[in-house]
Every structure is written in C-alpha cells, then in structure tokens.
Length: 381
Image 1 (tube, rainbow, N blue to C red):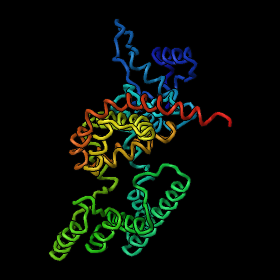
Image 2: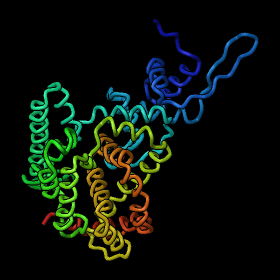
Image 3: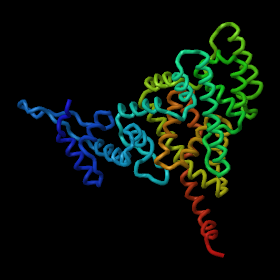
Image 4: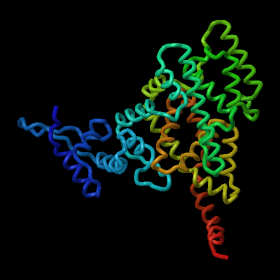
C-alpha cells in the first residue's frame, strides 16, 4: 500500500528544519510520527466537508530538531530516541542532560526495544544462548555455563586492560578471576533456576562476587545464614528465591507496569548525578575540604546502592556523549525494572541532599584552584 503524499504539517516541519540547516525529508518525519516519537497537534476540521488538518505545536519543532541531530549519522530511531531522552544531542565533549518533551509512546517503545537488544546484560546473553540449543536440559546447562563464563571472562580482561591504562571501569566489571567465575555461575542460575545448581553452589558464587565485611548485609556471617535458609527451602521442595537479576520477559513486564512519570523522575535524578560527576572529580583532585563533599562520602560509605549509583554516574560521565546514552539507559532500566531498587531509590538519593546543590560551585572553585598549577606545568623549562 502506497503512502499518501506529505501533509501540510509534515511539509511545514521539513521546511522549518531546513531553515535550521537540518535536511529531513517529510517521509522521515512521518516515520518519527508513526513510531510515536513526535508530539503532534490535534486534528482540526476545515469545515464544509473539506476534511481536517494537523497543526504543529511548539514541542513538535523542539523534538524534531533533537531527533534530526541524533539521526544525522543514520542511527536507528530507537537509539536516537534514547539519546534524546538522556543526553543532549548537540553535546560532543561533556555529558549534558536534555529535557526534550518526547512523547511517552515513543520512549516506551525505545526502552522495550533496548531490553530485547541489550548485549551488556549477562542474563540476556545467557538467555539467547539457551534459547538457541532447544529443549534438551543437558545442552541448555552447557550453553548457559559457556555463555556466562565467556561473557565474564571477556569483561574481566577488558576491565584489567582499562585499569592498566588508567581508564574508567564499570562498577559491574569483575575485579578478579574468582569474581568473574562467581558472577558467571550466578548468571547461569538466574536463567536456568537456582535449583539446577544447588543452594550451596549459588550462594558461594554470590559471596565470591559481592561479599564484604564492610557491609553487615554482605558479611560472611550473613551469607552463612542465607545459605542455611536456602538449603532448608531446597530440602523442603520449595523453589529457591530468584536472584535479583530478572529475565528479559520479567523486566519488560515490570517496565510496562512502571508509570511514565516515575521513569522520567528516575531519569532526571540520574542526570543530576552524572552531571555532578565532573565537578566532584575536580573537587577531589583539588583536595577541597568542604562539608558537602564530606556528606556525600558519608552517604556513599553507608549505603551500597548510593555507592553503586555514584560509581555508575562517574563511569557514564567519562564516556563520550554519543555513547553515554547506552550506559545511562542500562542503569535507568536496572532501577525501573527492579521492584526493591525502585522502591528504595527516592530515599537513597534524597540522602545526598542538600550537598548536591553545592557540587557545581565546588567544581568552579576547584577549577580555579587547579588552573594555575596546570598553566605552570605547561610552561617550557
């Protein structure tokens, strides 16, 4: 079935973008609109049987310009929507959040697509490997083990090279071979079911990866107690508690159940954390002594989740804006599809207030203090 020609609104929007040095055809505008990525005005009747027309809104032009910038390199529309939803498309060097008024329908479609295409998640990689070998239990177990261990071995070696080069490492990367092996067992159990591996094996792997005597909930004593409870459930024939790593289908269901306003709120808070990462780096480098910095470090030390969010924000801030959207989206989805994390998120990040309000001022102070030292270091001897 052939498309109808361009509407008056589509032609008008294409001409508007061209005036801003953005060449976008009416056909591409229609694809954006049909995907749900463009806000569009209500149809207005022309009267006397002359039909109706759609009118552009102020938001339409703003979103269209952002999408045009994000698709300049022929990126998939889903990627472009997520780029616009997270990072300003005009930024090339430093992460700057964007508040473009994207419609809910387009954002949800893009987030759902990302869940299905995500290769950064060990669970997603193992799921695909298991699905590819059919229903034979033995082959599924072998495929799960192989995929999980290959995934974490690769992540371990990548992280090791990055650390040696002084680069940023993602907080989820294994810090040792034992950590990689433990995470691999846990990922395979998340897909096949913990019963396939036994309570002792899974809990031992979990302790290898997450155990910490600095955190009472993750201490050796805590794992001993959790293992005893899991073993008792196993002996009684009850299904063991699923790990916090959810399957793709479960995450997609949770995403559908999460209010769009909640998704936007989490996006906003994470953007604040990422934008604060660079000023915080400068403040620490300048060795500033300030109550706001002390407060942030106290909260980081007291709350493992806040520690993780701040580490992720630091990692995202170091990536180029063209790539940052992917890590940002992954973190956003991990919160919005995790019931316990989402429930605790507001309380977790609120604990950082009001120190975050002072971060950018601290960054300017630190930059001013560091500037003379940088200038002196650059002068020839």
